[in-house]
Image (cartoon, rainbow, N blue to C red; front, side, top):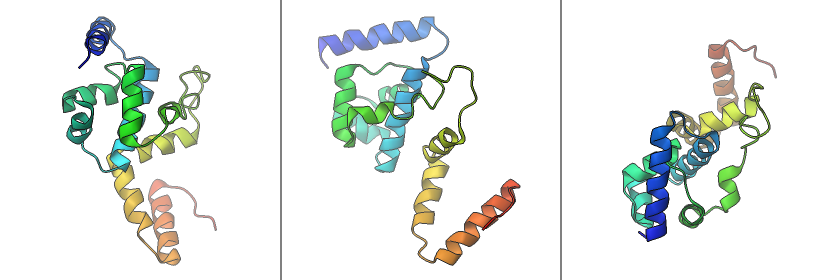
Length: 152
C-alpha cells in the first residue's frame, strides 16, 4: 500500500468516525462496486486480493463507510471491467445530487433491488427460463402477490 493511500484511508476513517452518517455519494459508489462485483460472481475476498486489500476494507467501501480515492476507483474499474463512470451512474436519480427531498423514481428502486443478492439470483434464474409463456406466468404471479393488477 502506498503512503498516500494509507494516509487517505486513515483520514477517511477519522472523518467517518467523527460523522455519524456516510456521505450519500460514497454510499452510492460503494453500492455500484457491490453490484458489479456480484454480477461477476466475485467474492469480497477475491476482489480484495486483486487490489491488495482485506475483505473488510472492501466491505467498508461497499457500505460507503470509507471513501474510495481516485486511484483506488481507477483500480476497481480495471479489476471489475467497467469504466470509472459506471460507479456514478444513476447518482442523480438516487436523490443525492439533484433530487433533494423528492421521492426516488421507481427505476432507482429496481436498480437497488437488482443490486441485492435476492434480486441478482432472481434475475439470473429468470433469464434461464426459455419458454416465453412460463416467463409471462411468473411475472403475472409476482404481480398478483404484490397486489398489482395484471394487464396484458
